[in-house]
Image 1 (cartoon, helix red, strand yellow):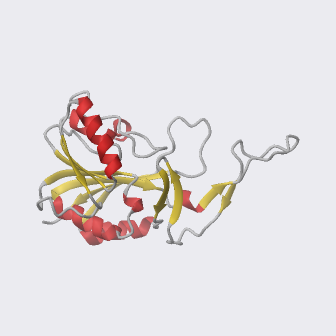
Image 2 (cartoon, rainbow, N blue to C red):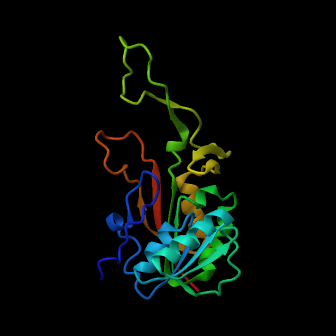
Length: 231
């Protein structure tokens, strides 16, 4: 492997990188599809690692920034504006790896995404993706006490359960570009959705935020690697 075969691409805002998790394998000469590429940082890193990259995002503004980033890095990426499940422009069995970091959680019909990813992946190709951990969406930090003589129990305030783990109504989070609607799902429902679409789950990770001084109460991100089975 080359030094860049596991690029430092993060699996989320508070998640480890591909250099640490090593879920994608050697990308040199592979055809990689990224779903929800944002401003293009991961797609460009994958291209520099030797992959032939196609990237999809619903935001024209994101793709404009991504194209500029790729031009500066002098790498070629094929950019497509559209929904994460609108993959009709790709032939069946034409992609080696599909990657998505914190994007599939924003899709209402995740089953359609799984079916489309299965269609475009080559047999035994890997689908590696992450999103907000469903347990993290159930809780919120309470405000730090203003009473200096009575500090909060935790440095960042206590934790309050705000919703049921089984509540699948959308949640609006504050993202870097403004409010983002995400769709909470139980871990078992995602597992079953992958199974129905023809995937075999190989890896399920609930990593702690990197560089945290104290042990976190809940994982902020969940990461999956599933392998296409069948044709």
